[in-house]
Image 1 (cartoon, rainbow, N blue to C red):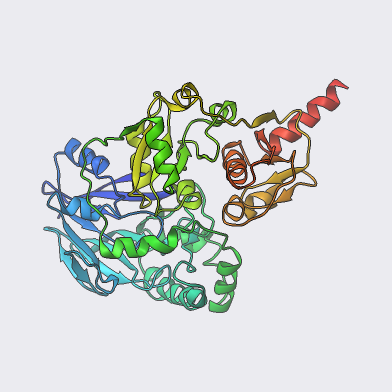
Image 2: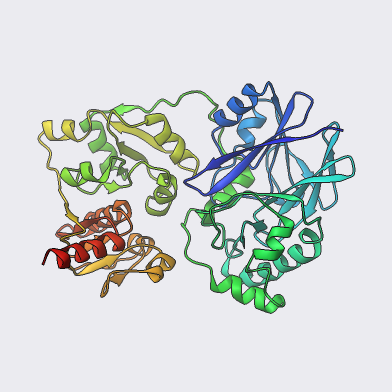
Length: 452
């Protein structure tokens, strides 16, 4: 009997987990890998393994799959047959099995999150040892069903109910469940911070499984769905056709002089400033969009920037240029022109104008306030009288903000993104950005009262 060891590779920014499974014979299987293969190769190398299989549960909407990258290095791609991949893959239907040499991978049709969705049951002989549930059963949640198109949302929610109750919840209560989507993923209905669960735990504690019938489940699920980034609507097709293969080596981010950047911008390029917000506030190129390089950089890049124009980055020398490119590529950005050589300093040396945005400490900030967090965050607590407009709505609308408005989120990064978006199209915006969130503002008010 083989016994699989399972390593989780977590993308904190996207809220997803992928897995490397030790097959017990010197080979490994990657499950729902993200685009850059280096982490999987390193994990396999540390364990003396060769990645022989790369397995997809569904056509992902929130990231570019890494299966084609791993296939270029010798792995066999395994995926739902109905996904219709346009690159070589072994297509599976419900009940099909892959002999892993002592272990078996069995495909279970679990439509709902997507129409083609498969979960995979890992068997040691006849004994189930793990369920890779992809975007079906999650920790304390299930995945959303509104990512195909609006007309299919309820139908897919009903499919998901049946997948759960007819297929997944019939498995042993002590079976370990390894979801792909988790806390922080826009693909999931709200989920907690844990990433691995069991069938029995979800039966006992998952609020969506407590729904008394299919209709109640559908209502509960659909009522909990929030907004999601627009790039979700294009990445399924990118993954179906097969993304470009870049390889596991280091990234070469070209350095561009000021005149080259000028030329690119005149021809439609966007400038993305990935520096921390205090540096952006102190001086930035007019029209540039602030998206600070952090865990969630890829999500907000995908939400705020078009994918069909060249991107020029402003990034400082003490930031990870390779990481910046990997983050952009994992949500499908291929037209990366490079980075401004010398940064904003070179821009100023060339005699170019810079813009500034005032940062306001939460303890002294005054309104009017615009809160750009997600609806669920705003509902959980906000500054009295604050107007709520999600960052995504600001980015893709034409909502003017009154001069002197203080823009806020939970810490300041999303607020600075919003201010930069507004400044790009409303040059006299004169906005301020709150450093901190509602709790910091409330603490500041409390301290002021105590001092008084």
